[in-house]
Length: 85
Image 1 (cartoon, rainbow, N blue to C red):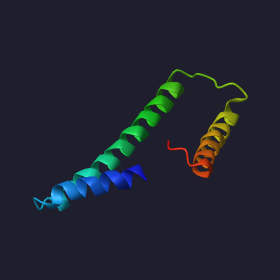
Image 2: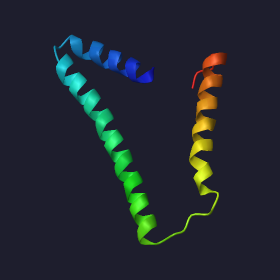
Image 3: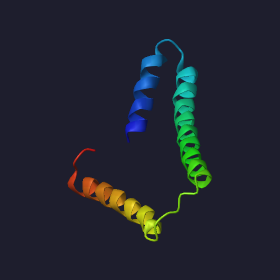
Image 4: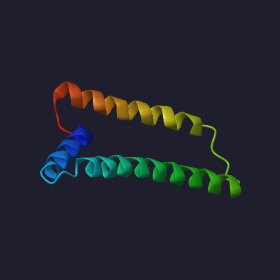
């Protein structure tokens, strides 16, 4: 939702000067760069963990599914109650 709002505001602001393609390029490019930075950070953490041979506890496999479920539950509650995030 916010991404679309930002895109709309950016496009409207640039439409008077005719820079809509440039605004769209930088908007989309910024999103892609952010995703690549996140992936690079995650891969860096994985590489450091493997290099240092840090053993994960036996329960560590449960953390990602519970985290995903917690975030999904928060989003569901926000949407059902109409509370802005």
